[in-house]
Length: 575
Image 1 (cartoon, rainbow, N blue to C red):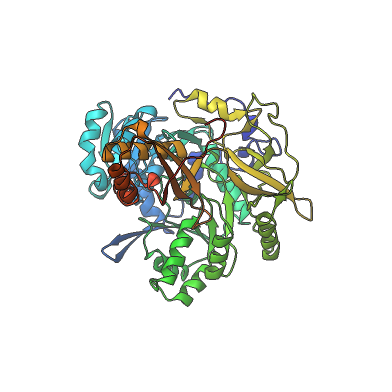
Image 2 (cartoon, rainbow, N blue to C red; image 1 turned 90 degrees about the vertical axis):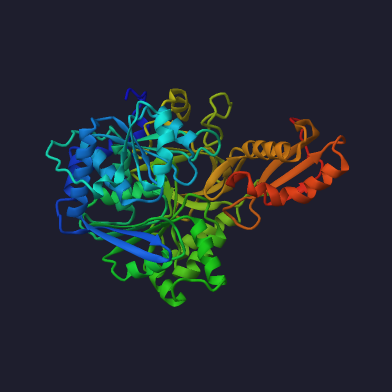
């Protein structure tokens, strides 16, 4: 693929000015992955599927997983997949075949592109296949009923059912494709909840940086045992980054769950009994909400004391949404300690800042509370602690503006002053696929400026800069770890009213705002409808009595209203 990438190397260097490859002994990504699978007898993957309440477990050694990956590589090679060819991955849940083909792609030089099995309809899949210029599509049984429509819309794409690995193993005798660390590893799409999703091209350099960052973060030696416990969808950046780390590291064991469901907590409790060292569970705040709800309803799938003991031995890595005081206290209640809070995005391959593992818990609690009670210019400005930059891998700073047209462009903020978080590091993505202009717009002055998060920095007693998340800069509704533009939600609800209640768009106005009422990391969708004089009394009454109940049955997840009022919409001078 002739993709235009950012050609300034400055954003991707270590703090020392050296490339991240200076810290590895491997000459290529292929060598790194192959070395991780040298010990064929070592256990590698525990895969858990759920069927009518029963938990089905499958264990693969490194040798068995490697054999499957080589067979998958042979199938890909036979189809003509070579270096740089992109492959859309249509999987209906977390699948061991998805993971197998991700390793197989390394062996032939192919590039997987993610499909969001939770929300992507066929139109979205066609868009992703088109924008990536994908020539192949992998799919599982859960996608089989949709394939004929996709084939008709994508005549140049070859389709392959991933389950072929269970029926037809092939030997792979060809030499592995030589790869460089700047070569494209995978395309992970953003959620697309504020418009069409962007295809984020992440290189092998990004994932090498991710691995080295976390091994340094947790203080791991080269041979230290580590278990990963993953349930977040593989089409998200967090599970992609952590599963790739497991594929690259000798002796790592990966527990992969098909999807989140209540028995998750029982599986974790049983898995922890066999932990060999560090046991990392990647979660989002929503999972902690679910757990707390299960406890209150008396529906825990395992005895409370047993679960708490297991969680106390688990290194909980949490992020993807703001982590506020309620979530922190709930984790402490269940695990007896503070989780590892990280902050980043798809474009940063997971992490740019994190709460240091070396900080005593008393110091972490102090830092958290300082943020919760922060004031600036005599105004309350509570922030959520997101830790520090990770020397020498990531660098961040806070600036007044990232807009080149602003007089405050790239002007550093003073301590405590809110501003835009910008970043550097080898973890950064290479480009937005098929969108040179968007790529150019987020790499400025040697920094990645596309996070668009408002933060502030404070100094601790030793002079370290601690960073605190404050808000997003745009009108976004945060739900389920995803962002929905107010305008997008308002447009969908307006269309619903017009279609369902036969009102003219000129007969009413509608405004949406997100307010964290029940949760500190989830916004309630609060809707105001202003009806004008030409709406009849009967239509007005029908709308007022039925909208809150009827809309959730028809609109998308992000547009479901939680609170509704009929009133005049307050407007500023801009309207």
